[in-house]
Length: 400
Image (cartoon, rainbow, N blue to C red; front, side):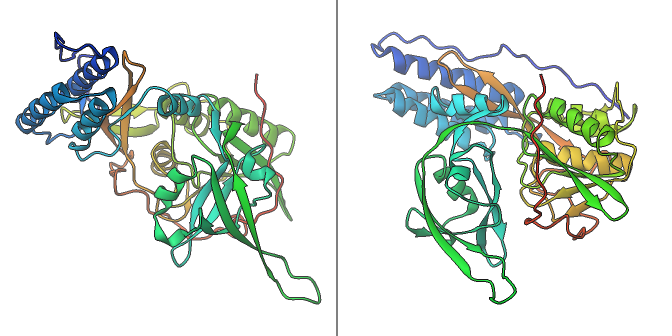
C-alpha cells in the first residue's frame, strides 16, 4: 500500500547571536554548526532517533563552539557533533576541496589519479578500473594489476577504504602484472613502480561494447557512476548496440559502482522496466513509507538481460539492481553487494560547505532492506563475462 510522506521543514535552523567574536570566519562556522544541527533535528532518518539525548549532545557541543579559538576548532566541534549520530554518511564537507570535489563528481568532472581499487583473494588489492585519459592510464596501469605497496606500506596494513582516501593525493605505488605466457615460456610476473599525481579527469560514466558470440552479439554496458548525464549515455549505448550491432542479449555491469545521483538510477530504470513496475520502497524518519513506481518508462531493452554486481556495488547501484531483480526477474550475477541503502539530502550552507544528512532508508520492491543487507546474487559466475581481464574494446558515448 502506498503512503505519502510527511513533508518536513527545509528552513528550520538554530539561531544564535555572536556578541563578542571578532573572527568573522569563526562566526560563520558556528552558524554552520547551528544550521547543521537544525537539519539533523528535523530530517535525520533514524526512526529511533533519541531527541532528548541529541538535545543534550547539542547543548554540550554548542558550548564547545563558544570556546573555539579558530574556525578549524569550530569545524572540529561540528564534525564531532555529527559523528555522535553513528551514521558515517551524515557529514559536513568543508568549503574548498571537499565540497568542490563532491560537486564535480556528480557533474562528471574530477581531479584524481583515475583508478579504482578492488578486493582480491587473500585480503589483497587489485586495480578494478582505470579511467581514460587519467594519470593512472598514462602511467601504464592496467585493470587486474595487483597493488603491493602504496607510499612504501604493504596494502594489507590498511583497509581498501583507507587506501582509497590516501590515493586522493599524490602517491607512489608498487604493482605487479601477470604477463601472458607464450608457446615456450611460462607466465612471469612483471613488477613496476609508478608515481601518481592527481590531475583533471572528465569521467565517462558509461562504457559499452559489442561482445561477439558464435550465435550472435551481446551488448555490454558498464555504468561507472550515476552522474547527472549517465542516463543519457546509457540510452545512447542501448540505441547503438541495438540498431548498429543488433545485440540479442545485454549485460549491465554495476561492479565497483559506488552510487551517485538516485534520480539518474531511476532514469536508467525507466529504460529497462515497464510503467507501473516498482523501483523501490522509501522509509522516512517518521516511519511512513512510499512505494516509488515507474512512470513514463520506455522499456528499451526487451532482450534477455543480466546484471553484474560485486562488493563494490553500492547505494544507487543496489537500488537499480534490486528493482530489476524484483520487478522484472533479472538475474544478478557475481557477489553480495556493499549494503548502503540510505539517501542523503545535500544542503549548501552559507560558509560554502555542504551538509549531507541521511533522510530516508530504501528497500527493494520485495521489501528487502538494502542497508547492511543487500544483495544476494542468483549466480556466482557468468562465463567469460565475469572475467576482469575481458579484452573487449569499451567505448565512451558522447551525448550532446
